Length: 249
Ligand SMILES: CC(C)(COP(=O)(O)OP(=O)(O)OC[C@H]1O[C@@H](n2cnc3c(N)ncnc32)[C@H](O)[C@@H]1OP(=O)(O)O)[C@@H](O)C(=O)NCCC(=O)NCCS
Image 1 (cartoon, rainbow, N blue to C red):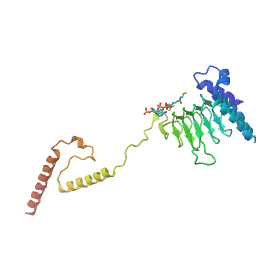
Image 2: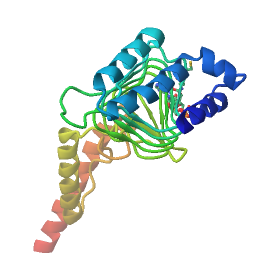
Image 3: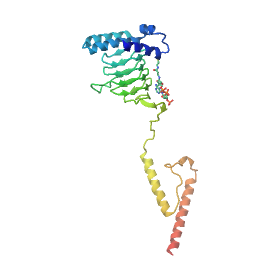
Protein backbone atom coordinates (compact mmCIF):
# COMPACT_ATOMS: atom_id res chain seq x y z
CA UNK A 1 0.00 0.00 0.00
CA UNK A 2 2.95 2.27 0.82
CA UNK A 3 4.28 2.00 -2.74
CA UNK A 4 0.88 2.88 -4.22
CA UNK A 5 0.74 6.03 -2.09
CA UNK A 6 4.23 6.93 -3.23
CA UNK A 7 3.22 6.40 -6.88
CA UNK A 8 0.25 8.75 -6.41
CA UNK A 9 2.47 11.40 -4.86
CA UNK A 10 5.05 11.01 -7.68
CA UNK A 11 2.34 11.48 -10.34
CA UNK A 12 1.11 14.60 -8.59
CA UNK A 13 4.63 16.06 -8.39
CA UNK A 14 5.87 15.09 -11.85
CA UNK A 15 2.85 15.86 -14.01
CA UNK A 16 2.18 19.60 -14.24
CA UNK A 17 -1.29 18.75 -15.58
CA UNK A 18 -2.24 16.61 -12.56
CA UNK A 19 -4.79 18.31 -10.31
CA UNK A 20 -5.39 15.89 -7.43
CA UNK A 21 -4.83 12.29 -6.31
CA UNK A 22 -8.45 11.34 -6.86
CA UNK A 23 -8.20 12.21 -10.55
CA UNK A 24 -4.88 10.39 -10.88
CA UNK A 25 -6.26 7.27 -9.20
CA UNK A 26 -9.24 6.96 -11.52
CA UNK A 27 -7.99 8.36 -14.84
CA UNK A 28 -4.21 7.86 -15.23
CA UNK A 29 -3.27 4.80 -17.31
CA UNK A 30 0.34 4.88 -16.08
CA UNK A 31 -0.76 4.87 -12.46
CA UNK A 32 -3.30 2.09 -13.11
CA UNK A 33 -0.61 -0.07 -14.73
CA UNK A 34 1.71 0.32 -11.75
CA UNK A 35 -1.08 -0.22 -9.25
CA UNK A 36 -2.05 -3.47 -10.95
CA UNK A 37 1.62 -4.45 -11.24
CA UNK A 38 2.01 -4.25 -7.46
CA UNK A 39 -0.63 -6.99 -7.12
CA UNK A 40 0.69 -9.03 -10.05
CA UNK A 41 4.19 -8.93 -8.54
CA UNK A 42 2.88 -10.12 -5.17
CA UNK A 43 1.14 -13.11 -6.79
CA UNK A 44 4.25 -13.83 -8.88
CA UNK A 45 6.40 -13.96 -5.74
CA UNK A 46 3.89 -16.22 -3.97
CA UNK A 47 3.99 -19.02 -6.53
CA UNK A 48 0.82 -17.88 -8.33
CA UNK A 49 2.54 -17.05 -11.59
CA UNK A 50 -0.43 -17.83 -13.79
CA UNK A 51 -2.66 -15.46 -11.84
CA UNK A 52 0.11 -12.82 -11.94
CA UNK A 53 0.33 -13.16 -15.73
CA UNK A 54 -3.42 -12.90 -16.03
CA UNK A 55 -3.38 -9.55 -14.20
CA UNK A 56 -0.47 -8.33 -16.36
CA UNK A 57 -2.23 -9.26 -19.59
CA UNK A 58 -5.37 -7.44 -18.40
CA UNK A 59 -3.21 -4.39 -17.65
CA UNK A 60 -1.78 -4.46 -21.17
CA UNK A 61 -5.28 -4.65 -22.66
CA UNK A 62 -6.61 -1.78 -20.54
CA UNK A 63 -3.63 0.60 -20.62
CA UNK A 64 -1.32 -0.40 -23.47
CA UNK A 65 1.46 -0.81 -20.88
CA UNK A 66 3.16 -4.19 -20.71
CA UNK A 67 4.97 -4.91 -17.43
CA UNK A 68 6.23 -8.40 -16.70
CA UNK A 69 4.99 -9.38 -13.21
CA UNK A 70 8.54 -10.32 -12.14
CA UNK A 71 9.90 -6.78 -12.73
CA UNK A 72 11.06 -5.12 -9.50
CA UNK A 73 9.72 -1.57 -9.29
CA UNK A 74 10.31 0.66 -6.26
CA UNK A 75 7.68 3.08 -4.96
CA UNK A 76 7.32 6.62 -6.31
CA UNK A 77 7.61 5.69 -10.00
CA UNK A 78 5.47 7.55 -12.54
CA UNK A 79 4.64 6.35 -16.06
CA UNK A 80 3.36 9.42 -17.91
CA UNK A 81 0.86 8.79 -20.75
CA UNK A 82 2.26 5.29 -20.82
CA UNK A 83 0.95 3.81 -24.04
CA UNK A 84 3.52 1.52 -25.61
CA UNK A 85 5.70 1.14 -22.50
CA UNK A 86 7.29 -2.31 -22.21
CA UNK A 87 9.11 -3.42 -19.04
CA UNK A 88 10.86 -6.79 -19.18
CA UNK A 89 11.10 -9.62 -16.69
CA UNK A 90 14.46 -8.85 -15.05
CA UNK A 91 14.11 -5.07 -15.01
CA UNK A 92 14.79 -3.28 -11.72
CA UNK A 93 13.56 0.28 -11.29
CA UNK A 94 14.55 2.53 -8.39
CA UNK A 95 12.53 5.19 -6.61
CA UNK A 96 11.33 8.44 -8.13
CA UNK A 97 11.82 7.32 -11.76
CA UNK A 98 9.83 9.01 -14.55
CA UNK A 99 9.00 7.01 -17.67
CA UNK A 100 7.26 8.44 -20.74
CA UNK A 101 5.23 6.73 -23.44
CA UNK A 102 6.87 4.36 -25.89
CA UNK A 103 9.77 3.42 -23.59
CA UNK A 104 11.15 -0.10 -23.80
CA UNK A 105 13.22 -1.51 -20.96
CA UNK A 106 14.09 -4.73 -22.74
CA UNK A 107 16.72 -7.24 -23.72
CA UNK A 108 19.01 -7.28 -26.73
CA UNK A 109 18.21 -10.93 -27.36
CA UNK A 110 21.85 -11.86 -26.67
CA UNK A 111 21.80 -12.29 -22.90
CA UNK A 112 20.40 -14.94 -20.61
CA UNK A 113 19.44 -14.66 -16.92
CA UNK A 114 19.58 -10.96 -16.01
CA UNK A 115 19.02 -9.56 -19.49
CA UNK A 116 17.14 -6.32 -18.86
CA UNK A 117 18.31 -2.95 -17.50
CA UNK A 118 18.58 -1.68 -13.95
CA UNK A 119 17.36 1.89 -13.56
CA UNK A 120 18.63 3.64 -10.45
CA UNK A 121 16.77 6.32 -8.45
CA UNK A 122 15.64 9.68 -9.92
CA UNK A 123 16.13 8.73 -13.58
CA UNK A 124 14.00 10.20 -16.37
CA UNK A 125 13.46 8.09 -19.50
CA UNK A 126 11.98 10.21 -22.28
CA UNK A 127 9.40 9.29 -24.88
CA UNK A 128 10.30 6.46 -27.23
CA UNK A 129 13.67 5.68 -25.63
CA UNK A 130 14.89 2.08 -25.75
CA UNK A 131 17.16 0.89 -22.96
CA UNK A 132 18.40 -2.56 -23.82
CA UNK A 133 20.47 -5.27 -22.15
CA UNK A 134 21.60 -5.89 -18.55
CA UNK A 135 23.02 -2.38 -18.22
CA UNK A 136 22.80 0.10 -15.34
CA UNK A 137 21.43 3.61 -15.79
CA UNK A 138 23.04 5.58 -12.95
CA UNK A 139 20.94 7.63 -10.58
CA UNK A 140 19.83 11.17 -11.47
CA UNK A 141 20.35 10.59 -15.21
CA UNK A 142 18.21 11.59 -18.20
CA UNK A 143 17.70 9.52 -21.31
CA UNK A 144 16.71 11.67 -24.30
CA UNK A 145 13.62 11.04 -26.41
CA UNK A 146 14.17 8.42 -29.09
CA UNK A 147 17.56 7.27 -27.77
CA UNK A 148 18.75 3.69 -27.91
CA UNK A 149 20.92 3.00 -24.88
CA UNK A 150 23.09 -0.11 -24.97
CA UNK A 151 25.85 0.69 -22.47
CA UNK A 152 26.02 1.56 -18.77
CA UNK A 153 25.20 5.19 -18.03
CA UNK A 154 27.14 6.92 -15.24
CA UNK A 155 25.13 8.76 -12.57
CA UNK A 156 24.09 12.38 -13.27
CA UNK A 157 24.36 11.98 -17.07
CA UNK A 158 22.26 13.00 -20.04
CA UNK A 159 22.30 10.42 -22.82
CA UNK A 160 20.94 11.08 -26.32
CA UNK A 161 21.09 9.55 -29.79
CA UNK A 162 21.28 6.18 -31.50
CA UNK A 163 23.31 4.52 -30.14
CA UNK A 164 22.99 6.60 -26.97
CA UNK A 165 26.03 8.60 -25.91
CA UNK A 166 26.65 10.74 -22.86
CA UNK A 167 26.39 14.44 -23.81
CA UNK A 168 26.25 15.89 -20.32
CA UNK A 169 27.80 14.78 -17.04
CA UNK A 170 27.11 16.60 -13.77
CA UNK A 171 25.46 19.37 -15.85
CA UNK A 172 28.62 19.90 -17.92
CA UNK A 173 28.79 19.28 -21.68
CA UNK A 174 30.86 16.25 -22.60
CA UNK A 175 32.71 16.48 -25.87
CA UNK A 176 33.44 12.81 -26.15
CA UNK A 177 33.35 12.70 -29.91
CA UNK A 178 36.92 12.45 -31.16
CA UNK A 179 36.56 13.66 -34.72
CA UNK A 180 40.31 13.43 -35.43
CA UNK A 181 40.78 10.42 -37.64
CA UNK A 182 44.32 9.09 -38.06
CA UNK A 183 45.84 10.04 -41.42
CA UNK A 184 48.89 7.82 -42.07
CA UNK A 185 49.94 9.76 -45.19
CA UNK A 186 49.94 13.08 -43.35
CA UNK A 187 51.83 11.45 -40.46
CA UNK A 188 54.47 10.15 -42.89
CA UNK A 189 54.82 13.64 -44.41
CA UNK A 190 55.28 15.05 -40.92
CA UNK A 191 58.03 12.50 -40.23
CA UNK A 192 59.77 13.32 -43.54
CA UNK A 193 59.50 17.05 -42.82
CA UNK A 194 61.14 16.59 -39.44
CA UNK A 195 63.99 14.63 -41.04
CA UNK A 196 64.44 17.30 -43.73
CA UNK A 197 64.50 20.01 -41.05
CA UNK A 198 67.23 18.10 -39.18
CA UNK A 199 69.27 17.65 -42.36
CA UNK A 200 68.84 21.33 -43.20
CA UNK A 201 70.01 22.31 -39.72
CA UNK A 202 73.10 20.10 -40.16
CA UNK A 203 73.85 21.50 -43.62
CA UNK A 204 72.99 25.03 -42.45
CA UNK A 205 70.57 25.57 -45.30
CA UNK A 206 66.96 26.69 -45.18
CA UNK A 207 64.46 25.49 -47.76
CA UNK A 208 60.71 24.82 -47.63
CA UNK A 209 58.84 27.21 -45.35
CA UNK A 210 55.40 25.81 -45.89
CA UNK A 211 54.01 22.48 -44.96
CA UNK A 212 50.51 21.06 -44.85
CA UNK A 213 51.62 19.09 -41.83
CA UNK A 214 52.43 22.24 -39.90
CA UNK A 215 50.27 25.13 -38.87
CA UNK A 216 51.02 27.10 -42.04
CA UNK A 217 48.55 25.64 -44.48
CA UNK A 218 48.89 25.55 -48.26
CA UNK A 219 46.23 28.29 -48.41
CA UNK A 220 48.82 30.87 -47.37
CA UNK A 221 51.23 30.18 -50.26
CA UNK A 222 51.46 32.82 -52.97
CA UNK A 223 51.50 31.61 -56.59
CA UNK A 224 55.23 32.06 -57.13
CA UNK A 225 56.32 31.35 -53.54
CA UNK A 226 57.44 27.81 -54.26
CA UNK A 227 59.54 28.97 -57.24
CA UNK A 228 61.14 31.58 -54.99
CA UNK A 229 61.92 28.95 -52.41
CA UNK A 230 63.63 26.77 -54.99
CA UNK A 231 65.83 29.69 -56.03
CA UNK A 232 66.63 30.37 -52.34
CA UNK A 233 67.48 26.72 -51.88
CA UNK A 234 69.79 26.68 -54.92
CA UNK A 235 71.52 29.85 -53.68
CA UNK A 236 72.03 28.41 -50.24
CA UNK A 237 73.45 25.18 -51.69
CA UNK A 238 75.84 27.25 -53.88
CA UNK A 239 76.91 29.27 -50.82
CA UNK A 240 77.56 26.09 -48.90
CA UNK A 241 79.64 24.69 -51.76
CA UNK A 242 81.69 27.89 -51.86
CA UNK A 243 82.25 27.74 -48.08
CA UNK A 244 83.36 24.13 -48.32
CA UNK A 245 85.74 24.94 -51.21
CA UNK A 246 87.22 27.82 -49.21
CA UNK A 247 87.75 25.55 -46.20
CA UNK A 248 89.45 22.92 -48.35
CA UNK A 249 91.83 25.55 -49.82
C1 LIG B 1 17.35 14.80 -22.98
C2 LIG B 1 16.40 15.85 -22.41
C3 LIG B 1 15.70 15.27 -21.23
C4 LIG B 1 17.18 17.12 -22.03
O1 LIG B 1 18.15 16.85 -21.06
P1 LIG B 1 19.18 17.99 -20.63
O2 LIG B 1 20.14 17.38 -19.66
O3 LIG B 1 18.45 19.19 -20.19
O4 LIG B 1 19.96 18.23 -21.98
P2 LIG B 1 20.02 19.52 -22.96
O5 LIG B 1 18.63 19.97 -23.28
O6 LIG B 1 20.96 20.51 -22.37
O7 LIG B 1 20.64 18.88 -24.26
C5 LIG B 1 21.99 18.45 -24.34
C6 LIG B 1 22.32 18.18 -25.80
O8 LIG B 1 21.60 17.04 -26.27
C7 LIG B 1 20.78 17.38 -27.40
N1 LIG B 1 19.52 16.64 -27.24
C8 LIG B 1 18.61 16.80 -26.28
N2 LIG B 1 17.63 15.90 -26.43
C9 LIG B 1 17.93 15.15 -27.52
C10 LIG B 1 17.31 14.06 -28.17
N3 LIG B 1 16.17 13.55 -27.70
N4 LIG B 1 17.91 13.51 -29.24
C11 LIG B 1 19.08 14.03 -29.71
N5 LIG B 1 19.73 15.09 -29.12
C12 LIG B 1 19.16 15.63 -28.05
C13 LIG B 1 20.59 18.88 -27.31
O9 LIG B 1 20.34 19.45 -28.56
C14 LIG B 1 21.91 19.31 -26.73
O10 LIG B 1 22.89 19.32 -27.76
P3 LIG B 1 23.83 20.62 -27.96
O11 LIG B 1 24.52 20.79 -26.63
O12 LIG B 1 24.74 20.21 -29.07
O13 LIG B 1 22.91 21.74 -28.28
C15 LIG B 1 15.35 16.32 -23.44
O14 LIG B 1 15.96 16.90 -24.53
C16 LIG B 1 14.38 15.27 -23.91
O15 LIG B 1 14.70 14.40 -24.72
N6 LIG B 1 13.16 15.42 -23.42
C17 LIG B 1 12.04 14.61 -23.83
C18 LIG B 1 11.02 14.56 -22.70
C19 LIG B 1 9.84 13.78 -23.15
O16 LIG B 1 9.92 12.61 -23.45
N7 LIG B 1 8.69 14.43 -23.20
C20 LIG B 1 7.48 13.80 -23.62
C21 LIG B 1 6.34 14.53 -22.98
S1 LIG B 1 4.84 13.86 -23.53
